[in-house]
Length: 201
Image (cartoon, rainbow, N blue to C red; front, top):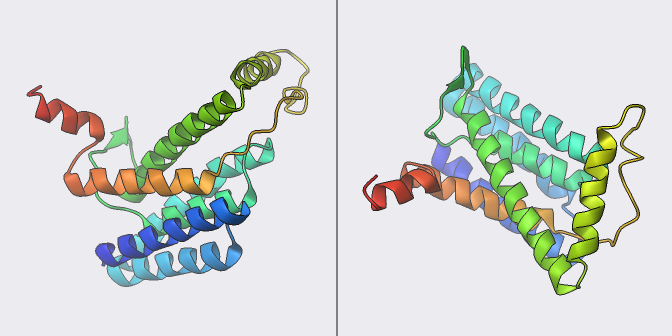
């Protein structure tokens, strides 16, 4: 059942990447049905426990991405796409818990996807800035915003300076991050652990 969900997930993120590259949007007609299908597959394959775990992963992804949306760093479609990834994903990972807290594998899967997607998105943004010869101003503006947030009495609006507008197709970053996380899951470990195995560590 999880293989079916993974195949659907790959199709969803591939379509999201294509629409984001073509029109700059990730559409509701894609992410809403994907989320519902993911939860239904979880219910059929894992009963109420499976539904709960996938719903928790979707909610966690939505909540964390919504924070990025609230400060203007993410589109609404990207938020809903990551929630769909949480609903559909869940391949067993080399992961456990934090102290006494033990999270379902679905939450770990979407956490890996988000980490990889943000890393890929950052690399894409830096590459775009460098190509447009805006790398210096972009890095300086970002650093200024981080410093402003540490000052007493400031808010997020104060930390968004005027800077060159560089659009990163985060739908593509999410697609690549999802494929990366799935590949690691099927290979049986993270990229770091696989490299360590190859070199005999």
